[in-house]
Image 1 (spheres, rainbow, N blue to C red):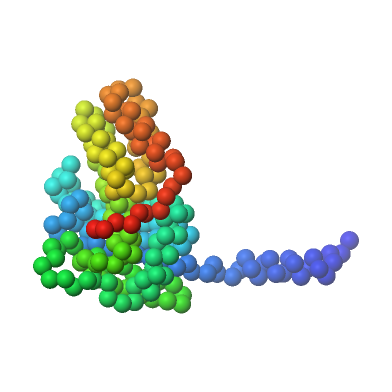
Image 2 (tube, one colour):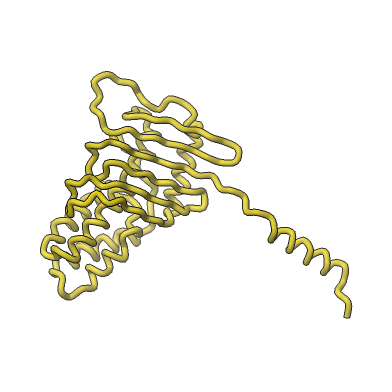
Length: 229
């Protein structure tokens, strides 16, 4: 039986669509650079509109293990936060403008750069500190993700070499989570589960790890407004 004309048209359309290159997605990139910065001397986070994200960072050598080896992490940002990032980029005119408040005698907190890229639009702005609440919010979100990754690295190190010291680190993380100082804790959930499930770890540390995981499993909320960076 010969295929119908409609079948041939549909097949040709499907083949043509499969051969078409995928449309490049929009992306937002945040970078931080400051030799005195702790825990990171510099880092960058790039998130695409799909939620796919990439982190690269150089830790300060005064960190837990004294290492300044680069850290690279791929992850998927939660829908609520990736949508917030692109919403804030739109509100800030895709970073096509001056974001720094240029207030005299403001302490140096590191060079920060926000950049937007899409097939239609490009924008980039560098700042130290901004009074704009939208800039503060997107900055806090990205720095909170960097803080999460830092704690993940510290906990992995302590799990191998300092199990007794993990409780204090986990207590800090519990407090940061409650104060919205860290975001995207799913990034470090494998390490937290390993701690929570290990009978050789102190019970209090296991309970703290379980608490963090339970809180992280609750319906996510977008990065909160903050008065400071």
